[in-house]
Image (cartoon, rainbow, N blue to C red; front, side, top):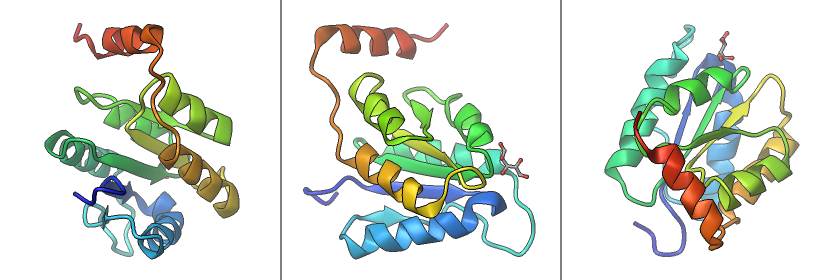
Length: 151
Ligand code: RB5
């Protein structure tokens, strides 16, 4: 893995495809290692859970990796990704969501709704997500450990 930047797995259904391409190109231009191989880029509609599960499994196999998932609303991707152990997927519509999802919730997957969030704001959310570290305050770690407990 690139020492400077985390490996980022990207994924979308048809609803998030164009925004995914824009984000992918921008990340690559900045030097991020990106794996954009897990989506199904046909002319057809695709099922968001297939991609969410693939990205979640890829992150489980690659310690320290992050994910960015896009669908029309971001909701389906976040629900599906969060079924996987160790995946904390946050649907963000503001930079503040992105900041808190990293600081307080240690999110490792960012979900975006491409039909709701424009390209400029989406990039600001991505940028904030990637540049915010987890808080070292004990209570946040304690709470995340409680999230990660399997019931
Ligand atoms: C596809 O029409 C749409 O359902 C999907 O992109 C997403 O919004 C689901 O949550």
